Amino acid sequence: MKKLRIPENLTTLAYKQIRTHLLTGPMEEGDRLTEEAVAQQLGISKSPIREAFTRLEADGLIRIEPRRGAYLRSFSIQEVIDIYDFREALEAHAVLTAQVTPALLAELEEHVRRNASSHAANDKTSYISGDIQFHTAIAAATGNRMLCQALDKLQDQLSILRRKTYDLSSSQAVAAHRAILAALAGPDRMVAVEAMRSHIRETRYRLVGFMRAGGG
Image 1: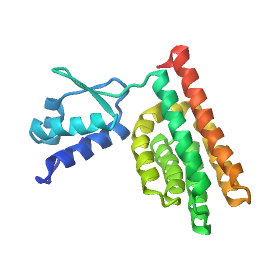
Image 2 (image 1 turned 180 degrees about the vertical axis):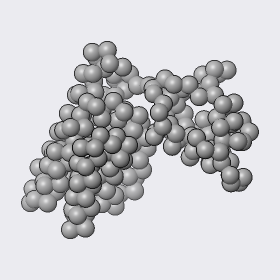
Image 3 (image 1 turned 60 degrees about the horizontal axis):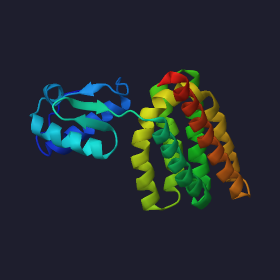
Image 4 (image 1 turned 180 degrees about the horizontal axis):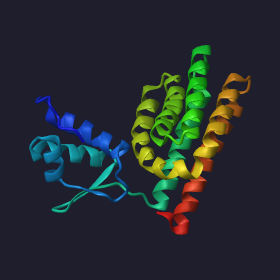
């Protein structure tokens, strides 16, 4: 992580910097962070780091153990099932209620194209970013701010899980996105709903199977 240069609002700045590191950095589930080490890396005192850790714990990204530090969140099998069930409910509703326009379809088509290229190049970071953008674009098209906020918060936890699901299901995801896009362009919106449900259920199935087999 790079040192922060802007002195004001240090808690928010620290929160954003640490969050980015958690979601896009090399950390694995269960890896440890300490206030002292992060404060040194960012070049600030421990107080805003402590407050940022509290916010990140509320976001479900870390767990804090008194006098030991913070750890990147890990998930039980039941938590994974619950997260993906909740995601399925939200995203199925998003597909059902999105205002489908030529602009939205063109945007989704571009996300699919870029994701296919990222996957072919094994560019994991770009692929995961594009995957999130595809789903976010559909949610935004609903105009439902509460739904978008719920998905945004859920995406943070899903970003941790995507480190596993990339290897497990990314080869099927591009085709799944194409199927969702084609269904959104068609006359029967329920076909798109079922395509989204199938996509999310397949990812959940692969991840839960991997975890039950001892894969973490």
